[in-house]
Image (cartoon, helix red, strand yellow):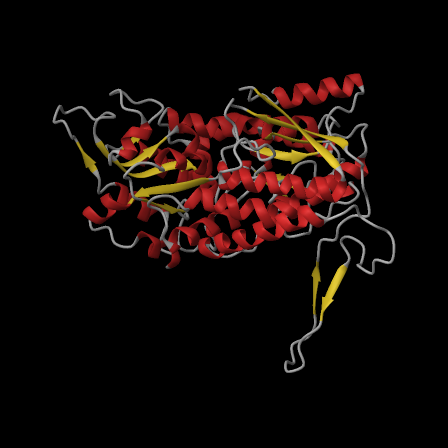
Length: 500
């Protein structure tokens, strides 16, 4: 979300209080009533008057209000599609003794009690990256049959983009009962994914799939201490965490541990990376394939900053201080390398953190580095192939029900699931420091959504990945090969969204 919701420990305390409140609400709440309730309609502004001893003006705050709807045990079907069989499913719970599962259970129970629905979660997966994965296939089949089998969905980014331009998804800005300006919907997503005032997929507190697949720099605290690298967190807060600083520190760690004169997975490195990290590194430099200008998409990747960051990152990845775990030899996995202290920095998404929970590894979290100190913010990217977005099919179904349930899911997720997700992500055996909580807020609050990645515009995303894989540094020449294709794809996208 765009505004920070507080640090780690505040979130955990809030979660405990909310959990108790939620359990009480689930036990006591009844169907919505249209009697003499004086509560304003959902989405209306609520004015909060100042106290008598202050001169501050009244502030206007939107508050969620339970819809005056009740569906009397009607089925509500959510389709969840991930590219891997153990993908993130924010709507199902398997063990309510676990913090996050319990929060999902309570959230589902609260919404079910509030609106009278019975949740059915349909999970499917496929590894397709063409936009025709399990989600696209199921929604297209449902469109053909006219069954209206799914009330809402969490579908991979590539499939969402394909379905959006096939007319298969509802414009969320037009769905009754959804107020995308509420804090529990991601405002960065709302601003950066809406083409010509149409938004077909988004995220927010309603899902932690996109959070699990958000990239960060995970660092080994012991190596940082042994190498006398100082306070890495302060580099971030002091605006010094730039790519050049990141590269300089990475170069301080490189060691042939077994003395065989061969640098492989049995040795020690400053940086453990993989092909796809080229995309979040470009994102961290503030660059996008497509940028929206008042809702109009424009190609913006081809510039000096992109050229420089691509060349710098490819060069760093080619040095002896770095190892690409997708193409390494030696027989040691990247998880074991990092756990055993063979890497200072690991570039990964948050879903990797549980791998280190029950180890002796002490690690910290940092955002990806800025391009330079002149850059205003730290920006964070997500793993495009793994990330799924929330959407609603355009046919036929009960759109009012889909809107009401989606809004209720989002609201109750903010109160219950998001705090639990923070606890699951950070509060482990060794990562309990306040600084990591602050870094997590910084990372999530400044995520970038690049439509050019999801629509695979001109295959520029693949081009960037292949440049890192093949150690190519000539960005300008590679872009020139894709430029005509990208421009044609952009025009097709604008035509579909009826942009002159």
